[in-house]
Amino acid sequence: MPQPASIYHSKSVCSSCNLAELCLPLDLSNNELLKLDELSMLKRDFSRGDYLYRNGDKFRSLFAIHSGSFKTQILHEDGREQVTGFQMTGEIIGLDAISTDIHACEAVAMENSVVCELPFNKLESLSRQIPSLQRHLHKIMSREIVRDQGIMLLLGSMRAEERLAAFLLNLSQRFSTRGLSATQFQLRMSRQEIGSYLGLKLETVSRAFSHFQNERLINVKVRTIEIIDLPGLQTCLNASR
Amino acid sequence: MPQPASIYHSKSVCSSCNLAELCLPLDLSNNELLKLDELSMLKRDFSRGDYLYRNGDKFRSLFAIHSGSFKTQILHEDGREQVTGFQMTGEIIGLDAISTDIHACEAVAMENSVVCELPFNKLESLSRQIPSLQRHLHKIMSREIVRDQGIMLLLGSMRAEERLAAFLLNLSQRFSTRGLSATQFQLRMSRQEIGSYLGLKLETVSRAFSHFQNERLINVKVRTIEIIDLPGLQTCLNASR
DNA sequence: GGTGCATTTTGACATATATCAAACCATCAT
DNA sequence: ATGATGGTTTGATATATGTCAAAATGCACC
Image (tube, rainbow over all chains, first blue to last red; front, side):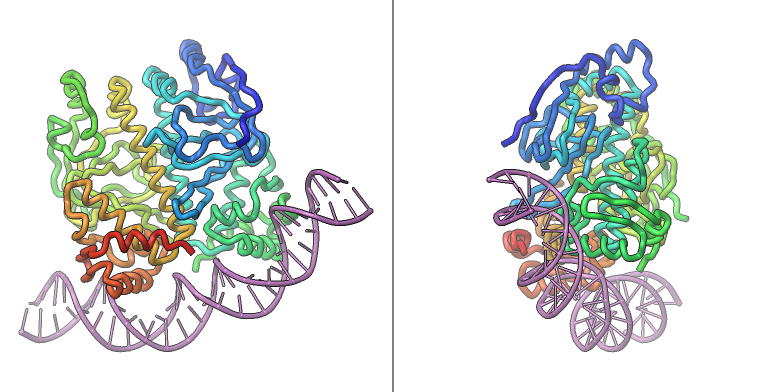
């Protein structure tokens, strides 16, 4: 059972976690920034495969991914498991556990990663004092709901290649909003993990990749992908049945 | 374009909306109850087919369903649409719109219904003053996330009959927590709507119903259903592939 | 009570994706 | 480099669900 390699403290939220969607968009007064220091976040390192939290763990904190990426997956009693999301640098993870105080899924690092811990009761007390933080927290939770409902649409009414196209375009967009290349990036997840997320078997995912390759929409070599024809990929989505 | 039939005011939140999951579980002081009156909720009537909100509507309020039930559905640009949830009496609806201030889906009454409107900025200001309300609001949002992720598991890894069994058991449970019969109830939604929600065609839903009927698990007659063998239905779910 | 329309059921057939299996390829340690 | 290991690709076949069509049923309206 792997453990985080190091734990160290940080005084200022936004210097330690500039990218975190939680703090970045807020326009705070000096006074409010001072209050934010109350969060006194812990930073923790993770290696590929490490658990950020496990099914059944007590909930205490949300986490801002400072660098790296994670996957979250739910485990059904009968052994079925499914990837429910991939979380990238700058995103917030752990929202699932607020409802019951117990984590309903597990989060695993897909590469070496650094995470800022945000104790939730401090977050709540701060957001009582800073309305813009409160509103932002609500938005983040609501966005997660909208996102999940988008996946429901995908799983419920799209065919295999449409699902993969939607997935790749989504990844592309998330990279580009972080100022990274929207057309060339690493796939940190396996075909099996992509398949689990998209409700497909890994063979189907692989075939869809191959097909896109043949159609000269992408250039994929195992974990490295380049999107050659972005508009072309987008039209895949509109090709309704 | 149907409009709500009547609008009238209510002074006390919890007398008008006893069932709403928002207020019910809170143990509030008199002082706090007084503050809750600030919400000064509007009650509105809806007939079957009326829209509570539409795609693109400006977001102002959450809604507590006082009686009746709604469905929410998202519309994809290419005409695809999918039911993302069924909301029953006592439940909160509208969480999707917080993230963008614009409703990302539409909500339609499945029967004659009464709804309490909860202006969101008042809710936010109240929850800044009443920590237990704040926490409860967070829990409701988080629960929606967990619920949606459950549907993702269902859509991604369950076969048609497992999906329907899960759906019926979920309905049953929601009725029973409201003190209603867990084994006999009306299906307010069509086969097509159930199918849309479960990622299936209506014919497949119908066949699954027929099969459960033959297996003597349920007794279904179009919109009326009786669960005869509840444990039997539950084992459907464990029958993994 | 009968007529017409919409929903549901049932059937025959088509097809997308799963399954099973083998070959291929990258990565890592020896 | 060499071999072992696990992920990936590709192929052949099976199967669950979709599609199309018709009959049956329920429901509203005259």
